[in-house]
Each structure stands twice: as structure tokens, then as C-alpha cells.
Image (cartoon, rainbow, N blue to C red; front, side):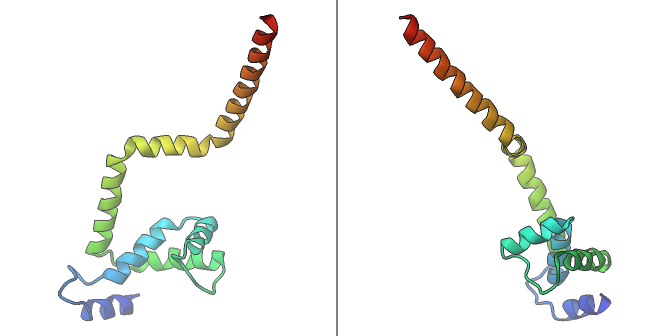
Length: 127
């Protein structure tokens, strides 16, 4: 991996803070991939494309990320993610709750609608 870092550092333009753009990008991708399902999701979104299997891609990134130098862009991305999480804390918590409990919420709403229908019918029969 030293070859990638040397090539990246020597070909860096003046616009880059430290020149390790590719290393930072690969480190962020490696940070996002923990399971084979993560690889599949990144493929589905068009972020990651390769001829390797999901397991091979997962092991590739886990081995690769250990030796990469973390550049300025990596830390800028991580700080951006952290700032986003802090500003959207309530929204993220609500989304997480709804996502994790979708089936339960759907079941409760369907039971409640059935009960409302029964009570309406009983009320109309009582009149």
C-alpha cells in the first residue's frame, strides 16, 4: 500500500490539502463496509462495482484499510458526518425507531382500525 500513498502524494495538485484523496475515499468506503450485506447495498446503489464476490470485496477492504494513510479529506468527511448526526439527532432517532419497529406499528394500526370499525358498528346498532 506504500506504493499507492507515494504515487498519490507525488501526483497531488495544489488544490488538495495533503494529496491523499484516494486513500481517504477508500478509507471511508472501508468504514462503511462491515458485512457482506453492506457490500451488496453499495453495489445496488452504484457506489461499488467489481467482479469480486461480496465476501472477497469485504475481505479486500478490511485488509486494504488497515494499511492506508488517513488524509485530510477522510477527517473532513468524518467530521461532516458527525456534524450531520448532531444537527439531525431527533430526526435520526425517529427514523431509526420507525425503521426498526415498522412491522409492530403496522400491526397495532391494523388492530386499532378493526377495533374502531367494530365500535362504530356497535354504536350504530345501539342507536
